[in-house]
Image (cartoon, rainbow, N blue to C red; front, side, top):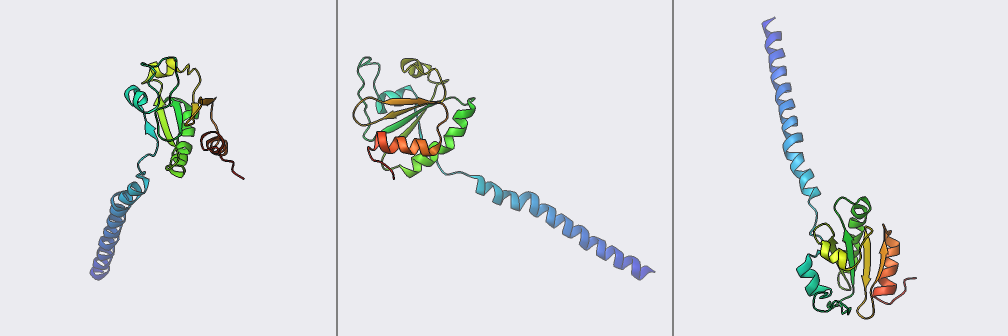
Length: 165
């Protein structure tokens, strides 16, 4: 009888040890692996405040009536707000496009809540508003969520002046 009791205790100790090790693995080690997979690469889009906008896009303070793009590549400007659902849906698409076209265009993001003056100067009343800025000529804009294929077509036809077949 004593032998059975000791065998049972030995079994229980091993069982509890395995439970402890499994729990430790699940909560600590596997969580570290999951977190490392969730770490995202640096965003390719460029967030602009007023100062950055005046330097990179257009100096509307010194030239309020004239559009003169200051960049060295065509650009997309995303006027967005953190609370805007369509803006949040559009954001990962713009990140993908920024990576795809990183050598050809800039993709700027302007938070209208933090940069009310820029939004006011450009008459932004709907979100998201996407402005396509070619190297020459005037910019063109679209409002609302735009799917990736429409954005790519606009990049190719408006900004890069090519057609995709």
